[in-house]
Figure 1 (cartoon, rainbow, N blue to C red):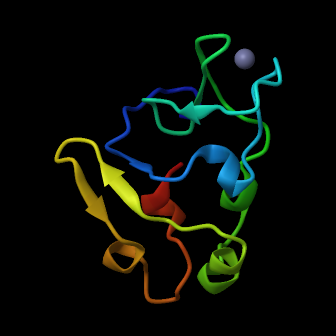
Figure 2: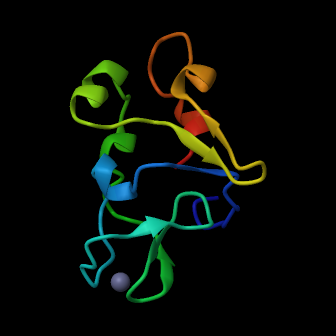
Length: 103
Ligand SMILES: [Zn+2]
């Protein structure tokens, strides 16, 4: 399952490095969101890659703490071009739901 590539339906507005996600092996400092879930895109190598470090997405995310660190989880919905705020999809425990987040 981890190797299957599934197209994203949304991306976060902030770039992956804002969430502490890892870089491509070449070390390019600004990977982008890949068109595939769980992958990032390296503009230097022009490849999709899976970062070794998923940053904040490795564990439960405490939203208020993340906000203090400058992280926001607003999404851009690719099909509609609409913006979805965190409060529109967050679960009741006030943690990001990884089942739905699926970075
Ligand atoms: Zn690269």
